Amino acid sequence: MKLAQTRDVVDGVLLLNKPRGLSSQQAVGCIKRLFSAKKAGHTGTLDPLADGLLPIGLGEATKFTQFLLDADKTYLATIALGAVTTTGDAEGEVLKERLVDLSREQIDQVIPKFIGAITQVPPMYSAIKLNGKPLYTYARNGQSIDRESRSIFINSLEVIDFIGSSLTVRVSCSKGTYIRVLAEDIGDALQCGAHLASLTREQAGQFRLSDAIGIDELERLDLPARRVLLKPLDSFADTLPVLKLVDADKSRLLKGQSVTIEQIINSQYRLFGLNGEFFGVGAVLDGVLSAQRLLNTQLSIKSLKELE
Image (cartoon, rainbow, N blue to C red; front, top):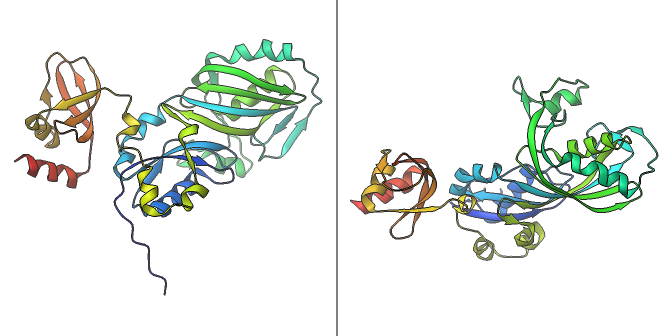
């Protein structure tokens, strides 16, 4: 009889270099197993076709994933010109093909049109829900649903390489950008059609792929060595300024009360006690500080008892 694995309370952030062929949720499952963690979650889906940076929150760090979900991302994308697929990427069936006879000058004329504020129509093969079901479930049944276009922002779009029908670009973009759709739209603008051939996420917010670790390398380490790699549990929110609070104000916040804070600008803050312990995120509005996300109830109760 095989005994169930005992999982621990593990808090922190791991920068994973996700391999191709693995879904983001499968990657999270691997990390939970490798860290013997009770709870884990990722900060923005990478399709199985894609590889690269997948920041994963463990334990209490999952409460702050929204800060990275909202952050800009950078990708290295290879676009296959001249072929349109059912899914907009290399996993789909080819619907139509066309010979590609383009010059670099033609590419350079089109690319700037996709920089700045633009709109995209989300793909049918996406996790966006309609009537409680992801769009991809309709697509797999051969259904096409009308979708409203969405506003996104492309910070930069740089041509890295262009050989024959293969175009490689580096794109920095806002939350909600579908690189598959960007590839298709570039193909339409070039009047040859296109799909996404490969994708690597290089950056998410303040985190970079160069600081990430692969699953194979993690498997070669023992559990203590793996856990040493974890970043602090407030790492997803570390672009926020720090606000240190005296024990009395910390106690009020942990009890669900607001705190009067004078001469502090309106903003979100990472909240710390005087001893340097992080305990949540709050926001100041017109001199009043309110908690937004705090550490779990057990930790809060423990903190309160320490303050009494």
